[in-house]
Amino acid sequence: MSDELKVAVTVAEMARMLRLSRSRLYQLIGTAFPEPSRDERGRPYYDAEQQAVCLEVRRRNCGVDGKPILFYAARGSVPAPAPKRQPKPKQAHPHAEVLDGVRALGLTMVTAAQVDAAVNQLFPGGVGGTDPGQVIRQVFLSIKARDSQGNVAR
Image (cartoon, rainbow, N blue to C red; front, side, top):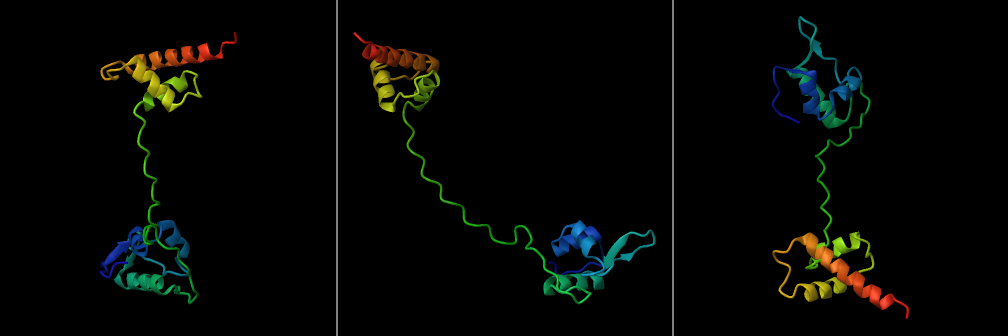
């Protein structure tokens, strides 16, 4: 709340000074807050004396009608709670994109170790410079073929 009062303020500006919405101020005019003065065109305003009364009502939580009034804390006036600590991100698997791609193609039970073994076998020099789609395709086919061979009943 400002200590410096202007000669006159609009109802909207008075509401800001009181940390209330304009509609809430209008609800409380006549009971908790004084009626605003009106200029020659009928526009409402608060002069310096009325501003002081309004600010005192807010400070004391006692309306001009003598009844107590409770105000909610203004947004942002209460310190925000400390942010929750985020868990440390796990080290990304070196072939996480390949693992996700192979799983998306239907091998949902494939492990990171299986993907690593297939990548190391298929690309002994590393996958650098190779199209990621090709890497995923090759690894998928390799793991699929390996699983099919081990699952065939003889």
